[in-house]
Length: 111
Length: 127
Image 1: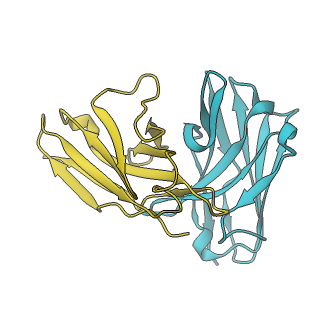
Image 2: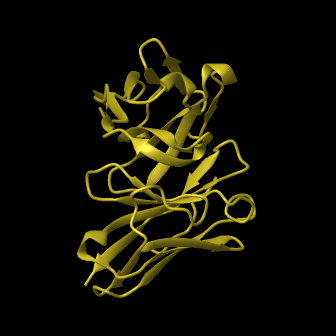
């Protein structure tokens, strides 16, 4: 099971919006609406910020939003803030025995 | 407070074995399906395996790279899940996290949305 494909890095200025893509296949992203997104700071555990493509867990800022089209899911961060700098990973449920596959990860830099 | 705490990480020689533990608190452990995820130094997240609850026969699934070498088990009396690792390889070097899925009311995302994570424990496989 190959990892989902994400851009290595995305950057933006404070207040701008950025979008991170997550490309999978018809066996994972394209088949299920079980795409999640995680934010991770260096040396820390990941934090769930989006589940089921576009739902936010309680307490997560509404500046984070998710969507999906075909085999590609996207995370948009609006009103970019310095605290948004970190690594972001998508994940998807999959038909294979792996059950859950993560993306390659995207480093977000706030300029 | 919902919490997971891993322990047991260590430096081990190639071919060796190690058992990691993950202790839970703040939720009904016996109902939870627990997942192990690892992250090699400077690399991305990798799903390792999952164990279901006793009512689901404690069924397990594993990622291909660890199948046959790693075993996940649980002790509900201790609110603890274990990851037994054997025939360790250099490529198993990673921070190992245990994680639990998000529950919204009675709807739990055990396999697709990991809300609770431990702090991670480092496993280094090197001679």
